[in-house]
Length: 285
Ligand code: PMP
Image (cartoon, rainbow, N blue to C red; front, top):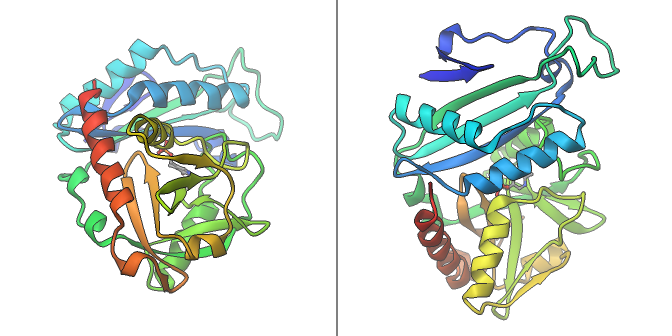
């Protein structure tokens, strides 16, 4: 694979980053994951915009020029012959060669920018979408700025392992009785045809797929309600699903051992997945 590091395209084995990089020492960095279908980028503009916001929130100075970022993404897709897959982009604060809690001087410290691709043939035809996910609920013990897409992913990784240990696929996180989101996706339930998902705040990541799915749902005259819901309400729902840039719309068929909708993906989730894939492929660049 060819990867991108700080302005250079290199074979992955030759790419290096300083051991003093604050991304490595302090998880002082942000990221984006953009999916590629048929060699084209899905919702690139959304990801570029959120990246800019995450950087701003952390006073990071890397100015991500839209056209430059797009060019790097496209170059990696071409060089690595990606038909279906993902592009991972990470920007960390870099380092001034020392370790200190205070941010280094932004005038003299350049951020570290890394991109690489992951080939995922048949990404949009995942057999998982026909089966649906089994999830468990776990406490949300993450920090209070989940709207910033930082590389602090240890707890979500632990959550995924807790799910695996329970024979499940993923976990939904609970705070004060309410579902915040999945380990790496936004969470939804469907009740009486209405799509319910938590309102945007600092408590959840503002999913790019979430924004698109809610827009498509409204355009298709489906009813949408943005509000918090409890895990008990979720277990009583007709359907549940999650969204993310890599899983698109993925049905959930079991929560903490209780099956939903007879244990098979529901009609609303299936329809939204179709609409999402159709519409976002049309708009892919
Ligand atoms: N919530 C969390 C915690 C995530 O990590 C992700 C994906 N990285 C999402 C939601 C979904 O966001 P998106 O649709 O932009 O991939």
